[in-house]
Image 1 (cartoon, one colour):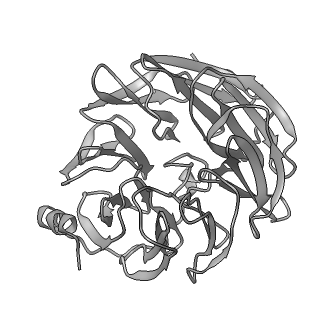
Image 2 (cartoon, helix red, strand yellow):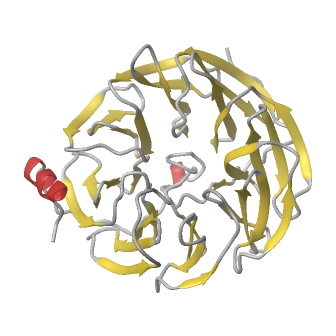
Length: 383
């Protein structure tokens, strides 16, 4: 049975039946950062074919008037898309990746979250305003007013947009905003859908779901205990789902069968990657300590402490990047935990993301938001 919210949305949108191939990043987006934790699988890892020499050097920084909002920062089409609070509103700036110049700006009435796919930037507002903009110039393509909003970033891939709203998971056509399908889930709202292959996953405290990404057909539901409000965005890696769950415990789940196969230590969503030999590794923050673990078993391999680390780590070419509240950004060898470089950015660290041969760092306070972009040492900013 569809939820009341789903019925309301179905009444307001026009369904569209379209066939799609299995979800996988387009070739021109595989090195970009297009949603929460870099990619639709939310595994927080990216590979730069040209390498990423250490230590990175700052290419430019921009300070924006308005308080920083800890939302998703994206890198695509040669731009950094950053969300922050303006003078009583919420804004998204498209900054040139080479020099930080503002290419376009959109202003919203409520806090927003964003995702990118195929030349379109999708923006979900906390009050239910869902909009699509042309990423190149900020021109609005379509607008939908949903009955309620979400505090979690949407996920977009292969021309489809996925949203977790209270009580239901939605798939919309990215070009038109038309509703493709909806399925009821427990709670929703603060979990970002995870998409890999033909599956889309929704994770909440003690509850994990898999649906067919094209049709919405339910595949499995892992019930670990009594449902509870909250979001538990999962990371997909190597046919497994890594679910951070503070209520029923972190779980490694077989993505095909929906069975729990192990656990791992973390207090937030982990990042996962493979080395040159194909061995899988995970890295997470565990009460402020950086923890490296086996992606197969969840067994802890190394730990790194010494800073007030926060947020989610990202991995660039096997180097784990973490930030601290004191403004330090540190690079660690993902296999051993050995420190390979560090630099100071700014206080009150916000987000880290990486794409298109660049590392973007945001920080700020109630009055200002700063965005800084770093690259290999030999590269310079273009005027």
